[in-house]
View (tube, one colour):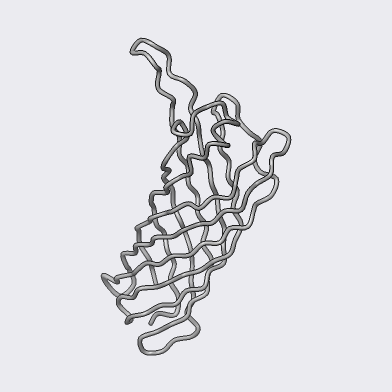
Amino acid sequence: MTVFVVDARGGRAWLSQDATVATALGVQPNDLPSRGWGFVVGAHVYPIRAKKFAVGFGAEMLRIGGSNTVEAETEDGIDGPTVKTKWSHLSPQVSFNFGARDGWSYLTLGLGRSKLTMENEDEPQDDPESAVGTLNYGGGARWFMNKHLAFTVDLRFYSINAQEATTGRIATPKMRLRVFTAGFSVR
């Protein structure tokens, strides 16, 4: 297996349409964005290696954004507010990798911090003062097309702790989000 890999992936997140958040923003749950788009970058080293197995350590950063504009109730009506979700996450990772030098699958686990903002575009909220704990877990695969470049896919679940309300910010409950990404790795 490889000594190190650097990843850059883009992808889709399935976002929460929580009723308590919708009420706090003055909209219906289905008015909240149900998906977002973004990217993940990361780097991993593999200090423990065997012929078909390796343990990796690294870090990843994720940024996701989504928005939804509430449609007018009548054909000639005015559209309602635009509701936005912004999410950033930073996490150390450990991975268990199975395969060979030119292609392998992995299971990964990380415990990091997230900043999540769900807001009405007309009434922006303050950025979070601090991040909340977030567990992420999932898996993926890398297939090397040549000596240095691989195609990578990844499916991850993120369990984000609740954020309390503060002046200028609504509370968000504990939620679990899914993110599917695809991109390239370099070794």
